[in-house]
Amino acid sequence: MTHETDYWFDLGPIQAIPKRGARTVSLPRREIAVFRTANDEVFALENRCPHKGGPLSDGIVHGRKVACPLHNWIIDLESGAATGADQGCARSFPIKVENDRVFIDMGVAAAP
Image 1 (spheres, rainbow, N blue to C red):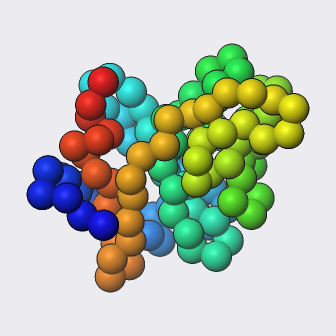
Image 2: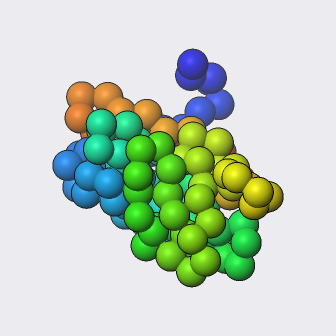
């Protein structure tokens, strides 16, 4: 659902994000990791594990989850929540794919 206050920014073609991988978008207040699953689903999370701040974009994507490269915390790509016994959450951001191009809602992503 699109709101009148949404500001969708074109991040480029989906093919620029490796399958089962990520690329990063640097903003003044944060870095966002944009993930692509093997099934071409796309998700965006703040590029910081809720455990020790590890770079989630360097993690291994499996299914709809990513493993933090520092301590192997498993983070759900849709919600940003740690799974299993681990607790914490990486901030997630609205993202969509239209005509094979990836867009992020910069109104939400740029907010503190």
